[in-house]
Amino acid sequence: MQLDDLYRRVIMDHYKNPRNRGKFEDDAVTIDLNNPTCGDRISLQMKVEDGIVKDAKYTGEGCSISMSSASMMTDAVKGKTLEEALELASKFSCLMQGEDVEFEEYEDIEALSGVNKFPARIKCATLAWNALRKGIDDTE
Ligand code: FES
Ligand code: FES
Image (cartoon, rainbow, N blue to C red; front, side):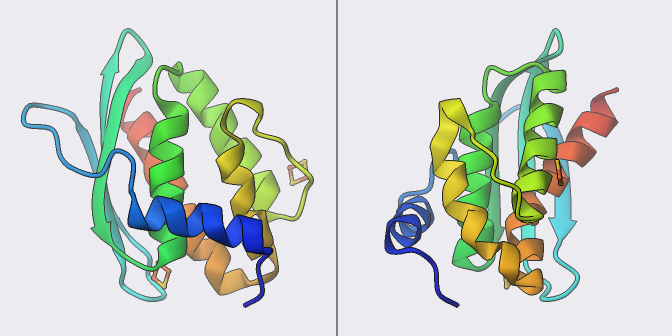
């Protein structure tokens, strides 16, 4: 797989220095999801108060694309309303379909745009976002 060098660096930075990796000690919305094609998994946790994602963390095992995507996603949704978080998830789907999407506040996510030509990798990159959508469904 050929990804632009800058994009590759951003992805590897999130993989090696994950943001928000861990678990909450107390109650949180928890979503466990597998990528059925490889068996890799993510456990996403969110603290939701008054319709706002106050905090988010994740644990899991997977490839650099899946784990870096979880790192970026959890950073991006913190402080967002559930509606804004869903909008971000929709934007991410567009990015994975090859659209030219900008994530103004969190441009690291754009580093994943290069995976859109690789269907198996799209599943890796989308795992965390699917967990987010499920978590939002569960809170409503
Ligand atoms: Fe979202 Fe085209 S605008 S996929
Ligand atoms: Fe399993 Fe990427 S290979 S999530």
